[in-house]
Amino acid sequence: MKKWLLVGITALTASAASSVVVAEAKQDFTLVNKTGYTIDQVYVSPNAADNWLDDVLGQDVLEDGQKANIKFHSANEICKYDLKVIYDDKEEVEWTDINLCEEEKITIHWNKKSGESSATFD
Image 1 (cartoon, rainbow, N blue to C red):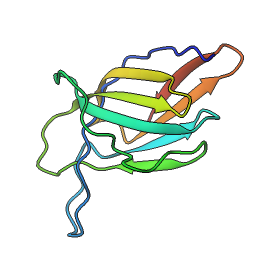
Image 2 (cartoon, helix red, strand yellow; image 1 turned 135 degrees about the vertical axis):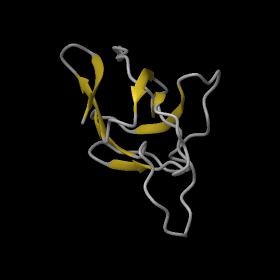
Image 3 (tube, rainbow, N blue to C red; image 1 turned 90 degrees about the vertical axis):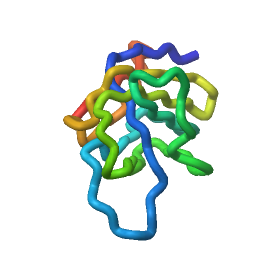
């Protein structure tokens, strides 16, 4: 059974991409899976929200070694978000208070030796 270390960060809200070319929002980021496991669901919501928004992966999953580009509506002014990932074995981990206006890439790791999950921000 995996144990997850909760690391404080801010989550993001993703909006559906339009076929029209739109300016990048300052909250757009790339999520990288370096856990050794498949991520089944990803939720990003404003830090002040009471519940999670829709799974930003939709019908897809994020296999180990893959990345997903998370896009926001360019008019969005919110910077602080919470992030939750659910793995294919239903284990969950959350990060809160992530400033997505400053982070361009979030890489999720799992340390098999310690049994802890963590995230790095670039």
